[in-house]
Length: 368
Ligand code: ADP
Ligand code: GN1
Ligand code: MG
Image (tube, rainbow, N blue to C red; front, side, top):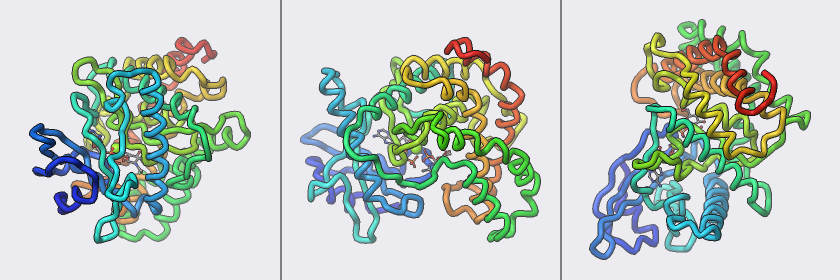
């Protein structure tokens, strides 16, 4: 637990700090929800420490976040949206006016108003949530398509280069830093057996068939806040990986996190399956806003869920073999559980591929 009162003094809060608690279930940053008294009114803010082990250049992350959130706010204000500041993250300036502050230990912090009356979900509850989440992520891609100026920084190079993720797994197997490779042989073999799938989308990007877009790159279900009253997806959050990428990896991660029948780290693989109604809702929600997709993208929507599930399983496995240095874990073997869960979900996706292709074909008029 950091000294959040001291952190609060680094920002132009115009309110008195009361208390702070660790918040949310993200795997990367340290997130706190802080209560303030603003001229007699209780108000909450999010303070976040960027994980600089994961993001090697956190200042560049904040340059991207500041540009994207400014653009989002300007767009909402120009549309006359009556709750523009609830529909995008906005950075509270630090004392020097920058969108971040550096503490005495060299950590980079940022502060956002807490978006009230909405929440993110680790596990989906109904088709409507899938529809709304996908619609909101599609709208976010529309928004970033109009971002003017220079190309955004690549905050994590090759973030969704699946063949390189497989190479990183092979390197982890070889060095076996934590002595865990022997016990994960079945999972290593499972990933290796799918090597041919890894390059399908990167090849399409290289050939120009799938265009580079400004994408979110971390579209898991809990990275969009859904209104508690209406379920509408009101605010896309966790913008650290918003950068050039492929819309397919964004759609794929929605499938990975909103179509399974259980949560991402459920160790009981017998619980894991694909909910095709949720998948159908994701496709409909996404296509309602992502109207810019070309034929190659539409033809790979169903495949994209398989690919990113494979990629994510490979990343959890790599981290397990490396001794859990990337993703936060809550118990020994957590990353291996996550990997097994992802690979079980991938098997379920493989079994349901024909049905999923048909759902996409029906919604998009691209032949299955
Ligand atoms: P991580 O990169 O670690 O996943 P996130 O930026 O996703 O960090 O934040 C972690 C969690 O904190 C989110 O899943 C969400 O529940 C919550 N959160 C983040 N920002 C806000 C905000 N401005 N308002 C309300 N909740 C937020
Ligand atoms: C991390 O930050 P969070 O928890 O939203 C990770 C994603 C993974 C996800 C798996 C920057 O997302 O890439 O898909 O965990 N984010 C980063 O749950 O690596
Ligand atoms: Mg997150």
